[in-house]
Length: 274
Image (tube, rainbow, N blue to C red):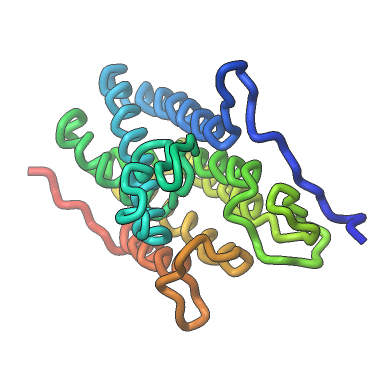
């Protein structure tokens, strides 16, 4: 019956004796390390200092992680504000007894907003160029990081797809199920690889990288177009408080990002430098 299906039952993480490093956390670490290495090469190409690169790393980690966590809670799990407030910011749950949970529940829409805000603050305090200058460059590592995070979701058996009879189906044993689902996390990860490669090519090989806002707009358009279509095979991630016209919360939240991307690609004109 399940001859063509993949039975998925990984361990929780790497046992380090006194501590278990969950694979999801490990993929976030990999995402930030790869991002740092990519930005190091870009900053060298742009003649920026190592000090400004170090500051960028700190602003990115704080902005993306806080944004991703708050985005999930606001859009999908708002009851935590009343029921378990400190679990929003800490890797612990206090409801029904103290429990280490790790950082679970991170929304990509919130991560994007957090990234934009943190890059605005970083530019104002450290870089002093333009917000779009840094956004045009930081989207490269962010796109690659999105690949790592979705692989982490797959390992964690979360953000699962709908049931399927397809040969691509995966049986997530840890969920106590014996039927196959779409590996929606891997669909996204696979597509995000191409988002990264397209951005990488534009930055290093074309003159379009000199058009302020173009890379940032391309990132928004591609990433959230992928997200929009993959949502059709995903299960709801929480309270779908936006759900009409056949579209779910993730899809409605993706549409503004796509439109903003189109604006920066084809309409936006930078103000002339005085």
